[in-house]
Length: 516
Ligand code: XMP
Image (cartoon, rainbow, N blue to C red; front, side, top):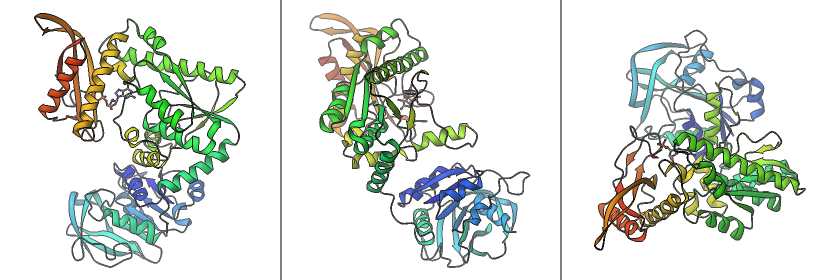
């Protein structure tokens, strides 16, 4: 395993991703974690990330001596290299020539880090992003690469296995970045290629068995990727000791509840309690049209229903000790950042956070060190249908925020049908996988249409499809006109309560992906 110490670079998370893609487990901690944790981690190598500071500034982040005491190879990237140079007596200065973006470095020595890895003889296309640079090598190091404006673009101390690179091997613009990281973790640190879905599952199952013993575990199953994978993993580990609660809030997509029951209860034999809470949710939402108020009501009602079910189960003499959650690694890193560097704080998910005091569970989070794509691979290996694993995200409040204004059962039923038609046609045409998220939205206005010889006033449905990588910005999907036409015709012909269909051509920003 590899330890990544984070000095605050925007690319830090990418380092952890690349190491894992190379088949090696790693975790990322803030640079200032206690020495004892560095010792306890059992790393076969340490990577120091980049960061925004200058080592010569007062109170700049330093490298904990424990990193060198554990006697393993160390790779410093950008600030990490500068901090290492500083630690061993080198000199760092502000660069008169700041380098940002693509650059070509020339190798000046064949150290074990660079050996044989190049884009053209002795040259590598890399990504630079720095204002400072090492101007004097520390003792024991040699220069292994240079650029015209950065004569010490990489350095190495071969006898200690300490390496520093001024560029960023973790970004894809560094063409051989993957090969360099793989070289470091495999050949230099000696890590085995053990981070595969099968191995992860085997390790997790063993850990869960030991942690849970013969106690009972409760899981809120939403049908989304994370909770589904937790369910499959726990079922494999503890079988009958797992009870899942699936809350049907009346704001789900067409047949969603049936599908969850079929996959988990019927096919896999997982114990799932389906709670039909449609009326409870719709009653709580009656008369409310403010989107944030709707979100809060849906979240709170979910917790109430979940807590009631948990109490009933406990009342049946099934003392439940553990509550499982689908927290994943980006959640952990996010919440660590918001707690100013105190890593590994528990994120309170909207669906299980804030349980009443009389329900005290110990938490189980078997995915808390995994990235989303790792979770997906685990799901597929565990036998969950790919269609479930690779589907578009669906917001917690569900159709509740896709029915503008007040939520009514009549509206939800219409929207479910329209949404299902849109999904069917997207899948049939191959566009489902080419869009990041797509759905229908219910507009509570009546628009005129003609049917036969008469006019009819009926509801309006908007279609929304977007392309995005991170959901922070998005472009409306350029769906073919023929496809939109088919969807529109089907919706207006098959759902008599709809007289008009529109296609949303707004991008984010300034619009958002959801309509509320
Ligand atoms: P927006 O509308 O903010 O959406 O552009 C970005 C992404 O977040 C999802 N989303 C939510 N997910 N609860 C959730 O669990 C919510 O209240 C919520 N609101 C938006 C949205 O579907 C999109 O993927």
